Length: 219
Image (cartoon, rainbow, N blue to C red; front, side, top):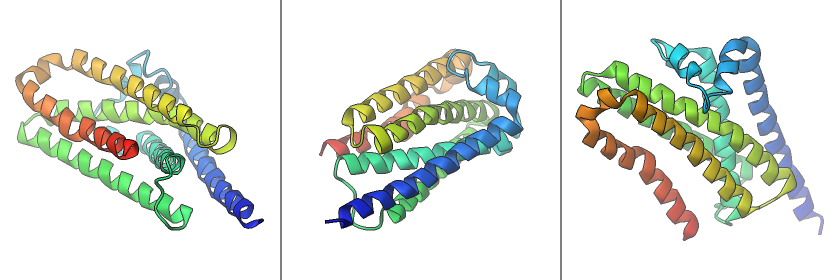
């Protein structure tokens, strides 16, 4: 009779450690790069962070790397909680499944980044493409703050709440939608000659994965 309780406690323990690590990463970024963090935290309402930091070497800057790590940790945990809520978790140790999700997500984002950079090289427009990628990743990193709060809710307060999941997805979509709208506004002249390719890119690398995930959860 006690085994399910023990298993639940162990499950929450590793999730607590994961959340703590992500918070340490975020706090480290805030402590080491306080001014950048202040600009980042108002990203959806002000483009100052993008305008000031969208330059050569932006992808290798430690602040950007820390925020991306924060995003990967929380997004992977969110995916795990979504699978658990919809009873879609495969057999195996929860922590092992989480690390598989983390590895898959990191690989997916890396491959997508390389494809995007290669696209910029092919069209001889790496500066514009780099700016687009940096802006998109920044908005995704910002979305991970919402995901962190949702993870806390799903683990400790509203366990297995589909409403919390749908609300989080809506908020993330809204934040990234704001980012895409600002991208189109700021880069409309540069993107106009490649508008068809830009739409194909959105369908292939941005929208298609979300559709596949939605279809999987619905099924």
